[in-house]
Image 1 (cartoon, helix red, strand yellow):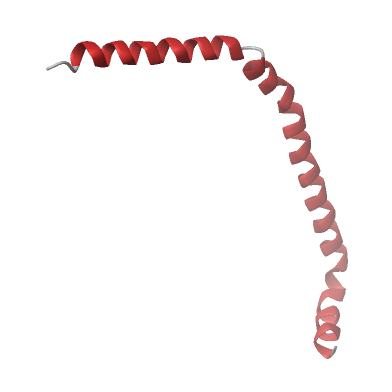
Image 2 (cartoon, rainbow, N blue to C red):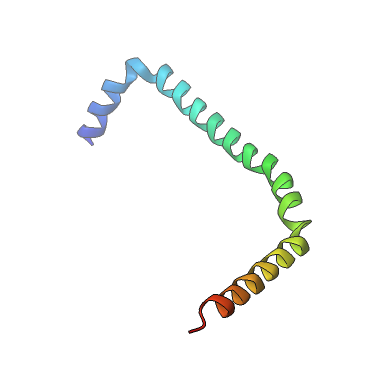
Length: 75
């Protein structure tokens, strides 16, 4: 218990700065969460609306690789 008492005695002159730092940390964490929340619709728009196009492009790329391997890897 005396250890905590000594720590509180050391912190006492700086409690305003410590409280301000904690409030700033909470503010920054809220802004980080808000940033992720605001970016979500843009990412959903890019990836979810174009999923059919992306699947088609992946299939075309796989077919192209398959044809390339069949043509150039024959002995």
